Image 1 (cartoon, helix red, strand yellow):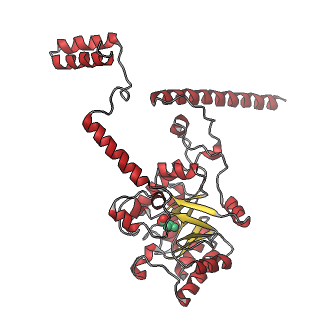
Image 2 (image 1 turned 90 degrees about the vertical axis):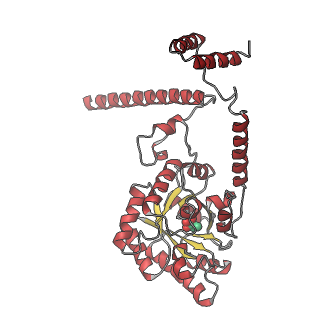
Length: 378
Ligand code: KIV
């Protein structure tokens, strides 16, 4: 009896604490919204499953970060989608804003691809990006995308030497980067062994066959794969080996659609195509490529020809930046409309007097002059 009463009392304390926390959140939202000139918005308190990893995240309650309406994508849900014959959508993300957009669009999987080396860091290949750089991208993405399954690419040089090296790198991707799974490229016997070692150590692995950009040194460049009998058979066999090693899905990149169809029929895990036609279980595209981010000739050069551009965001960005420059130079921006903060007449009079006492007549004059203009020149 006494025990039950004690438990009831504890429950009551917990409930009132939660209500108090929610009240504080609402105040912070209202303050943040008014500072940004927005009407206060109501956000539900985040549920435990909507927070990834960290418990000290006040900002997401203040600014209303992504609020998934659906539950988080898990390997089980992904599998259920595949079993139901529904196609899987995968898009790369590299930072908080791209992750938020991928999340809000309801994309199933956010891949923190080593394509970051090219589309974010401006390299010509994916080879230069380091594990630490990838971890930084992963951390930002895991803050922004709370609903999609998060897969982090193991970068070139972080996993090829031994299974132990791969486990170390992948462990960091999960522990520090907040990823749910990792992706590794290639299906050679040593790569399959690595994939198995990762899965055995409790790390979910996505495989990747066909064009594996980390191997351009041996492939001789970004070239479609599987166009001969031998190489097509190899793509299928490698995908099957990766499945046997325990991979939960396999990316199939830049192969003829017949070869991708063969892979998809040969394995019993989802195949995620890129430049591989329409016969796969899902599709992946690089965020910047599909949004048409690039205007710079270098980036136009690395946008692959199989990529459909769903927008021309680059044009919008350049146009906005040009308008900003023009308006700064002409003095149109910020103007009165974007100069929201005021000091009371009383305080500004005191300021003027202080400035005059200090002999800063020009400064005092500047205050008076602006006040005159703020009052409409009256
Ligand atoms: O790094 C990446 O973006 C990828 C996708 C192209 C599959 O590996």
